[in-house]
Image 1: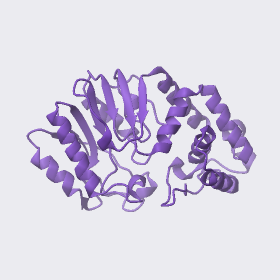
Image 2: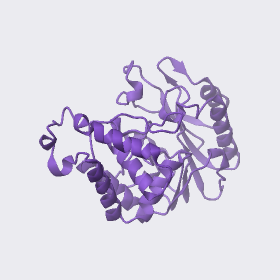
Image 3: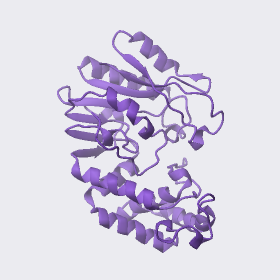
Length: 306
C-alpha cells in the first residue's frame, strides 16, 4: 500500500508519522478503495498510501481549508502568494540570499533578523477576521517562520508560537511543491468533522486513526480537546467498524515517561482475540513538547483488526 517515493507534509504537525512510515505502511492492506484518515493532521500517512481515493479529515478546520486551497490553486500561484507575503513583511529569504545577507549563520538561524517582522505578521493574522484565501496563506507563512515550524493556538484562538530559526528555504519550498502536485494528481477529498460524524462504508473503506495521545502533551489536547471521554468514544467507533467488517489501523502510545494509557491497554487486552498489536521503534525526542527526559522510551504501537 506504499507509494514509490515518500511525500512529506509541508506542515511540521506534532506527532506526525513521516519517520514511522517505513514501519507502518507495510502493515496496511493492498486492496483499498477508500483510505479514510480520520485524524489526518499534516496528511503524512494518507499521502503515502496506494488507494483509489483518500479522505483526509481533521477537526482543525484551518488546516483542512489550507489543504483545500493548495489543491484548487495552481502551484505557481500559491508560491507567488507566499513570496509576496514574505516580501511585504520583510522576512528573510535564504533560498535567494543565503544567511550572510541577513548577518546570520546557518547554525544560529534567522530568528534574530525575523523576530520583529514575524511578530507583526502574527499580530495581523490574529486580528484578521475574514477567513479568505489571504488568511490561509498568512497562516502557512506564519507556520513556516514559527518555532520548529509548528502550530499552536491559545485558548482565545490566537496563534501564539514565537519566531523560529528557519524560513521558506529551498527544502520547505520543495516539500510544498511536491505535496501540492500530489493533491492535484490524486483523488483526495477533505472534511473537518468530529470523527464520530464520519460515516463509513463497509464495501470500500479502510480506516486509519492517529488521534491525539491521551498521555502526552500534544498541541491537539492542550486546550482540553482530547480526554478520556474522546479516547473511549474512538475505541467504541473502531469496535463498531470491526463489527461492520471494516479494516482499521490505530496509532497510539501505550506508555510514555512512566505514564500508561490504561484505557487503551484494557481495550487491547479485552480484544486480544480480534486485534493485534505491533510495537514500533520511534522517539519524539526532537519535539519541543518532549524536551524533558528524552531518554525515556515511549511504547508506540499500531493496533490492527486483520
